[in-house]
Length: 211
Image (cartoon, rainbow, N blue to C red; front, side, top):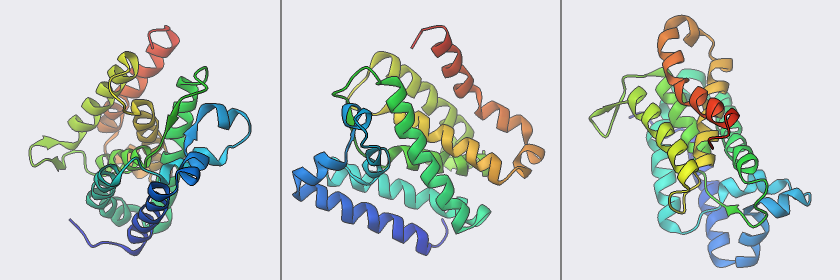
């Protein structure tokens, strides 16, 4: 595990400050959470702002600890500016996929940095596919397995979890990382293609009307 970079501190601080404001002020929380109906009425800021709100301190803590464990690897590979780009694109991608899959459910709401964090995780896995997660599982296997589970969760609507946001965030992290670090396509094209499998599966299932 590397050092806690200043940009990671800033992102974590922003999540903590905005989330705690939301914990104490329901009107603020309700105004900036992801909500399909509100977004369709023109409140697009919710696509971004919802990524800094959380349901409770436990939700916030889990996301920030996960970000802490993976951020350093991406920053070490591409630097702080490109890391921020990956983080923001992943956040937006997660929200946009949620909007696509819930476009007819005007009451659908969600919050959390999970999409952005999942994008950073997938980016880190691209740079080091054999990194050990939970000291046992190789990163590439975890990434594929998690996204396949997300597809299952989206199809079956399992739990109060934004599976679509997680998946969208991972896609955003995957695509943006390859754009910013195209050397990965030369260094390990086979692994890049393997990590794309869940993305292709979702695309095919969506085209076939299976999800």
